[in-house]
Image 1 (cartoon, rainbow, N blue to C red):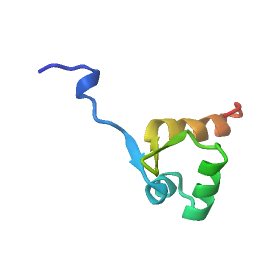
Image 2: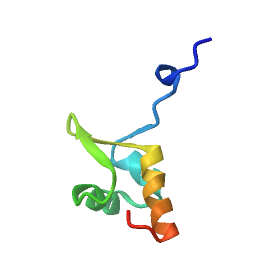
Image 3: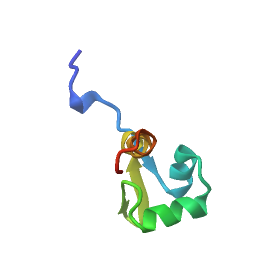
Length: 68
């Protein structure tokens, strides 16, 4: 079986509701963070999308004391 990047599942989180659940915040707080560029996300077709790995990385950096 071919093991390469093309076979890795995407770790995308689509929509404010799903991103909020991922970071344990409510939708309003999450929307504010997204709109102000505090989370690593992009709008695709009018919908917010982010990487689960990048979201976790932001909070890991905050906990370790590094700048996010």
